[in-house]
Length: 552
Image 1 (cartoon, rainbow, N blue to C red):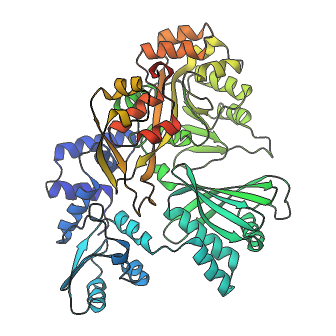
Image 2 (cartoon, rainbow, N blue to C red):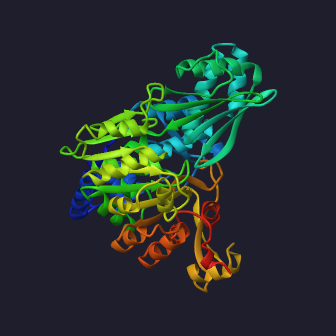
Image 3 (tube, helix red, strand yellow):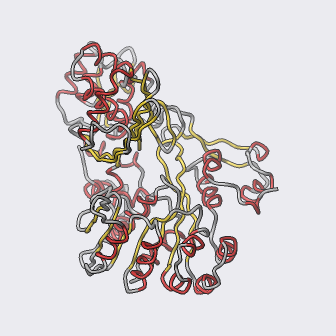
């Protein structure tokens, strides 16, 4: 039984797992934020994934098998062949001398019971229900290493390049990789995946097969196969029947050959709402207040790979209403959004951010998204667009929220114009989330927390603290982390802040005023997520500094 969010909510109400009033309130929020009602319920903690699984199981007249709390070991799972497990989406959940319990997300398939009874002859077979995502995680046990699969493809000598690329991309999607790196060495090519922001080696392929793989990628990306000494950028698509993903391709010449980086554009971003980003209730309220103003400028800042595009698309999704004209100019257009007018920067035709933005101004827009403010000309036009009755959203490179204003002023923006238009600065970083499948709590002695004692005492008090981390499991690749969330710094442009901008202040002066008005640092926002069990102190320290004032 596969249910969409609306149908599952009705089922939860019918089975008294959810009150009608909570469902109605969630529906209102879902409409407001253009999000799925089930996602809203999950983010508010009104239901859990396991509760949804329980509801579906009851509707089917089956017992719910919780694969998170009762993870079967690899040897047990592999007693069912890979062919049968994937065909019927079935997992061996429990087994003893007399009986067997198998679980599936497709119990309505009548063949499942008969096939399992034939496989476990002489034992009583019971079918239970598990969530599709949990079945997918368990089926990862059947994955063989890339080298093993490469060797088989090479031995068979059939369509080497297409099949090797397919295996790599299939693995990358399974491990939720955001990027795939092909790094040529002297005798082989190292393949690495960036998973949750961290690169890890996935496999190696002999160098003599790389030219065909490289040419295959170039052809699919519409790049020149006879060019080996210049950088090239392109795009391709990969589909395995169930999943289709757009891929950005970058090729650059290295000492040992051409390196390729594939950026896998996650389709889930198209449906991401503000509530999914990791914003605290206070931060979310600030963002909504600024986004609902008829004009002004909202900037999302941070380094490359900090999730700026995701935040901007979530804002656009929230603002996308039938009576509003939203136009974007991006380089490149990463995700196509229904009912949005999107322009692709094209350097060959000299369609730059600045020229595109000038054209957009003649297209009667209400809301404008500029993929990135990179130069003085774009900054000037953006500020003027926000000044003339448009809401303008853009990404901007700055180390933190306070450093954004001095950088904009250095791009020759007049202080009085900037003060008149800027409404909100959102600075962000990404941290890895603790894996839900293997998370556990422990009592940490304050002396063991790897931070200055002054910092520990301020944020954790003077008693031992309950913290969380992941043990490492097959689902998270034994890392203890699965997925990412953002930590934020927000500065709202109050009347006092606007007056300060007129004096062309330093980043320190801006942050001093922002602190007095309630702004929190990346580190402080991250500490809240540590206490909530979302991430760990080690992960937070990897991406955010302890504030100078909180050190010894």
